[in-house]
Length: 178
Image 1 (cartoon, helix red, strand yellow):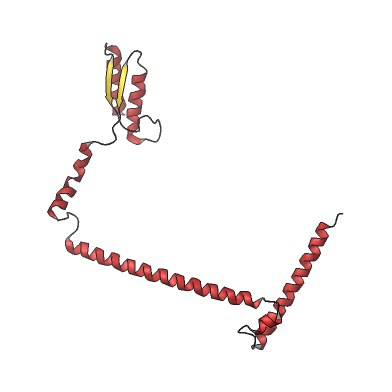
Image 2: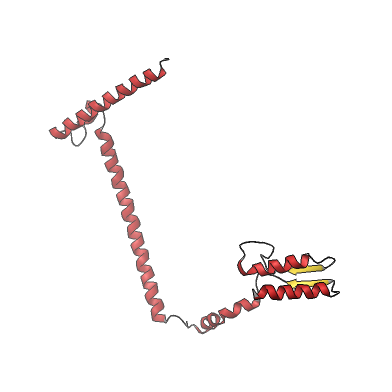
């Protein structure tokens, strides 16, 4: 890497001279040795300077430079003039309209989701009511007058009762010492 060649040359020049004090303009994050991208060269520079005996070094690790704003000059100028280099006012209005429409659709979807959840809760209550074992409770359910459905529910209740009895037997068997 060209950066490393330059760094190695500077470090050699500092080592070979009688320079005792160095101020290095490094970067925030240079103290990290891995996963720092382009800042790794600053890390290497700092490490090499630390290896020179008797050298007093101050590392300046700024986070931001004023020059970083140079890329934003067109944006700043556009904001001052009220214009945009990327979108016309009609495009902005169209985008705002689309955004409003998307918000309305999202609201409608949330309301539909809420309605469907309520419907699911009602249906769950009906299904739960179908497995009620009490004949009096079953008589009050909407399907009570429908003979085939009532027969199925009665059979389901019988099977549930048999299942409960089998579970009790199995638990007694498990708790009986061998």
